[in-house]
Amino acid sequence: MDEPIKTDVVIIGAGPIGLFAVFELGLLDMKAHLVDILDKVGGQCAELYPEKPIYDIPGIPFTSAQGLVDALKEQIKPFNPQYHLGEMVETVTKVGDNLFRVKTDQGKEFESKVVVIAAGGGSFQPKRPPIPGIEPYENKSVFYAVRKIEAFRGQRVLIIGGGDSALDWTLNLAPIAGHLTLLHRRSEFRASPDSVNKMMALFNEGKIDLVFGQATSLAGDGGQIRKAVVKTTDGSVFEIACDAILPFFGLTMKLGPVADWGFELKNNELIPVDTAAFETSTLGIFAIGDINWYPGKLKLILSGFHEAALMAQKAYHYVYPEKRLVFQYTTSSTSLQKKLGVAPAKVA
Image (cartoon, rainbow, N blue to C red):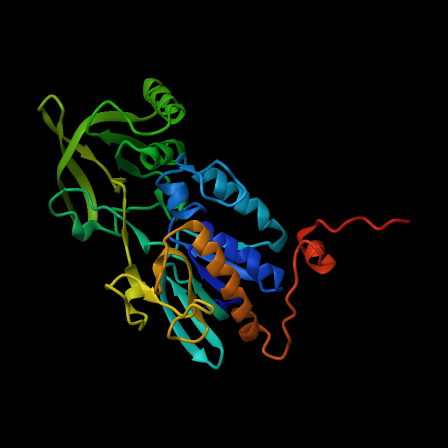
């Protein structure tokens, strides 16, 4: 077994609040690794509404959700955050004084002195398509995410869906798969026009098949899919031979494994924290952003930024128990400015 990745802080969630936590921790010389179940940085902002306008970030009259994520990624570059995307944290276990073991569903392990839960409304879970009998094939030959693209090399792949994820993976897997079919219930797509145009070009060149209809049943044995029965929009029924199916029917928010980590939850979905440092009932584990609860809580991004700042002040004492924390301002501290790469040049 590989040695666990050792770091100061593991941040669960790479949305805006998790990203800004990297900044506040970095100012205090704490290194962070971020784990997110999505395959991209940005959380809900990037996945669900990247073009949504945001008007309540102090000093920024207007930005888009994706624009905010991009700016935060740029802001934390000096601290070299390490991202682990497409992975879900399954367990957080205390393994000693001031030490946690964090494990993901991909078998990756971390050891850290602090854990920060910045998972928004919880973890994104894929929506199961309405295909009877799909459960026995899940995680064997039916997959809701692409973990390793090479696993599909030479296979007959059926992708179901019409959004960005379905189109993106159609484009990415077309050169890899032995044969690829895209199945969508109608001729209109919800993906970006550029992706649709590229997909249609592949279809017109005979490099993929495109079918309009819905899968009504599956056939196979031992968890291995062999074919999908499809009813097309014109009412005809036929079979598509396939070795793997990738359904992309969107995502839903669920609390996920967090519910089993021993916290007494508020309304079965929020983690209570104190208001001094937004620490949970387990010392060394913090919850910031939409996933936490305290009297007067406002579910705003700016509230999460405030929580990240106070969290970092308390986390410092777990990471550096022998050191005294001296509060500094980025506007006047040359040491902080050096960390950010903006220290003024010395006058000769």
